[in-house]
Length: 314
Image 1 (cartoon, helix red, strand yellow):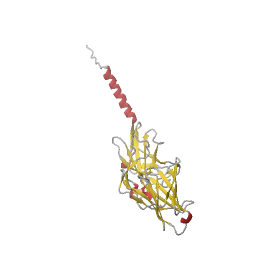
Image 2 (tube, rainbow, N blue to C red; image 1 turned 30 degrees about the horizontal axis):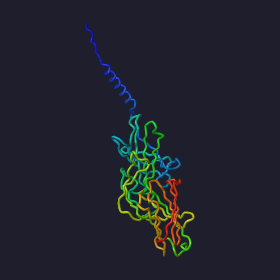
Image 3 (tube, rainbow, N blue to C red; image 1 turned 180 degrees about the vertical axis):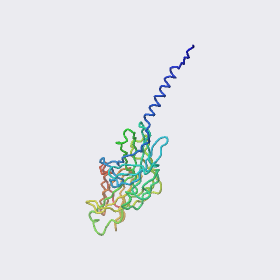
């Protein structure tokens, strides 16, 4: 009887074994059932605790768009489920990303627009128009935060999705001195000039030095933003706050102070207003001139720059 001999070339045998090993690895990595992607939201810069869009604490119930990158990536509507921990959960099954295997890593980008009204959620980057006449609700309703993270299944429990403020904030404190410090010369108006109110957020490029802050594509006609009058800072007579789109103004951003009988006086501040930065201009006005000391903070109040200047009344 002849014996049947089967010859398998060595390379073919290696390929078969490799294929089997790969199949076994895939079977090992695949989860028995998909698990929801849950995230912890932290807003930076800060003290390491969860921080909300404007009030520095989550209220709970804020909506956040969460996008996964790559083939099959999509955007889902998540919600801050816990005010104390910043836990983000999908609002329903259709709006929940899932883990499919234990060796999976997801690149995630997420964003939120303000805390109230129609600006609270958008599944894509939309045009934002800040009010040209602002009130106490402007910051919380129009501020935008954005963040990105690479999260693996293995570190899913400890991973944080850090958000960064993408707008700029301006505070103007005014005091009068000398002959101008009189009931005859009250401050009747403050505006920030030459700013475009509308823009659409653009994610930072892969080559960008700052990967935490994007840029804005601006549109509309440049004009004045009227900040709202807020609680007067200690040592000053008037205080105003505005939320503005980051942008650069050729020749500097005009800070316009109007006083009865003295007219409108202008100081040209720094030309660039950057994302995630809070600019504070402390203005002293007399009958002959206007002088300014500037402090630049991150959103948590940490000083990151200073400046000063003056201009005669014209």
